[in-house]
Length: 165
Ligand SMILES: Nc1ncnc2c1[nH]c(=O)n2[C@H]1C[C@H](O)[C@@H](COP(=O)(O)OP(=O)(O)OP(=O)(O)O)O1
Image (tube, rainbow, N blue to C red):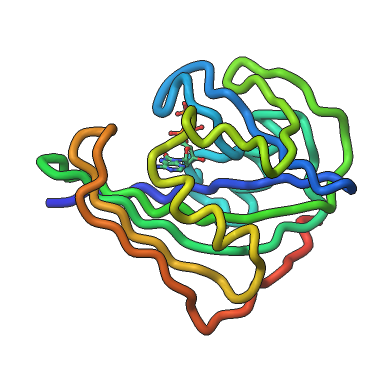
């Protein structure tokens, strides 16, 4: 029996193209830099979950979110399956703040700290950065530090921007 969790991950870029990452301070992925997101709660849409998590984790309010991809994760010897919906935005307001969960920091794209991120991040990030249609990624992990199967491909689905208001 697998247990599936639906999560969001949002990548914020500012007007000069820098990217906002957060250092996870607790829980799953502690010690890694990542975008902002978490589990979609019962009764909310995936988009609502993404907007809520962004505000909870770094203080920013997204006015719109663009769906850029989907990542599926399986784990050997673990029934947990993660379905991570990846969004980006440059359409937001508010001030970036450190929260109980995340310590945020702006990075130049060429300085993204991939060596301190999930192992899969450097594999799919270029699909996000280059634009084009939505991407789809699959990763099979052994534990949390080894990828034994991987695939990232383009879909036929264009990126879709939706208002959060
Ligand atoms: N392998 C990998 N690569 C990139 N991003 C991620 C993963 N695994 C992941 O879980 N993630 C992302 C997806 C989410 O954005 C976070 C994890 O969210 P999590 O902290 O488990 O969810 P919350 O709802 O915030 O958790 P709590 O509030 O229960 O602590 O990482």
